[in-house]
Amino acid sequence: MTSPDVALRSIMPAFEEVIPATIATASADGTPNITYISVARFLDEERIAISNQFFGKTTSNLEANPFLAVRVADPQTLLEYELDATRLRSERTGELFDSMRVQIDAIADQTGMRGVFRLRSVEVLRVDRCQLVEGSVGRLRRSTSSGAGALDGLSVFISRLDDCRELGELTQTALELLDDLFGIGSSMLLMADHDLKSLFVVAHHGYAGGVGAEIAVDEGVIGVAAQRRRQVLVSHVIRAQNLNRAAARSRTEDRQEIPLPGLAGAQSLGGSAPWTAS
Amino acid sequence: MVCLTARTGSAMRSNLAAKGRIAVTAAHPVTYSSAQVKGTVDVVRDPTDDELDRVEAHRARFAGAAAEVGATDAECLMLGDLVTVCFRADEAYDQTPGGRAGQALR
Image (tube, rainbow over all chains, first blue to last red; front, side):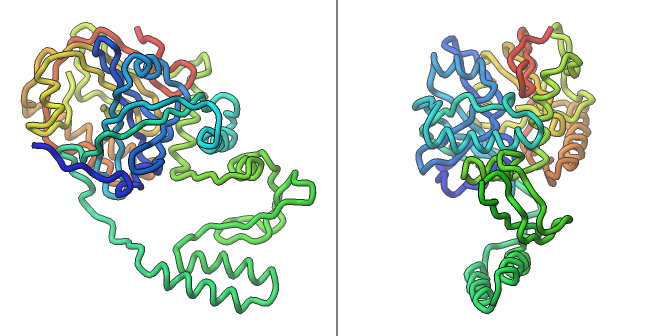
């Protein structure tokens, strides 16, 4: 039984980097290799891009055999999708590379891993087929949230801002309305100083601290976004931080033990660690 | 030996039935410590009751760990038809993100 093809655009949340995606490749002799992807980005209805920070075998496999499979999961429904794809090219410069690099650099800087957790290349893939994973169960307790009312909210937002008479009132009202109307509970507005070396908080909502707090341009997620003048989307802060910490541990001599069973007659089922297998 | 979710009649079941090469990767949802094992498929069969009990216990541990990083209902990712796969492992690699990713484990 074959599942129907799924439009990539209909599974956009699966590319929000909340649940790590995996990529499976095969060497020339057919030996499979599977690994996790930091960033898998939707490009258009036929293409996605994936980040390459630590690929070794994946890269050599793709050189020998451009056909691969990527598995992604929608964090809202927890349904999984398998993408059969073909590698089109590898990019190390350009707009796409820069936009993905700033994403990775910003998180790396926030966790003290600047220069280590860095983007080597972006692999551009053509998706030949996208299917719901056969047997994928999805979330048992479905979310009841919906995007209904967004346009009404926007109308109220604009109307209320129109009533503001001074800058301070305008900025504070805007951030409070983002919470009241759209459920964005934490927000801040920053402005750069005249020589573009620092950013200052001019309004905030939902954060501790005060107006006037300073962030150096090029420091942390906010500073790197400002320095490169690009958007940075961090969908899952804890995941991003843990990923970088794993890389940090990997650099140290005090290497964390990986509890693998011995290869001879190994039985790994039901091990003590809560790992997930693919 | 691993227990995997793969629906009867699925492409994965067909691939397993061919008894070719297999790669299995596992990652801790909190620490991202990861490893990959490669080998050749030996036996593919339905899980025993004891194996199903162990899968259930593992699923609960996984959901608990995933909840630590804010992922709710993560056990749903591990539901579905189960199949037990015994394979002869002959390669193992560290796959934790970082400079050692890809190094052979002994």
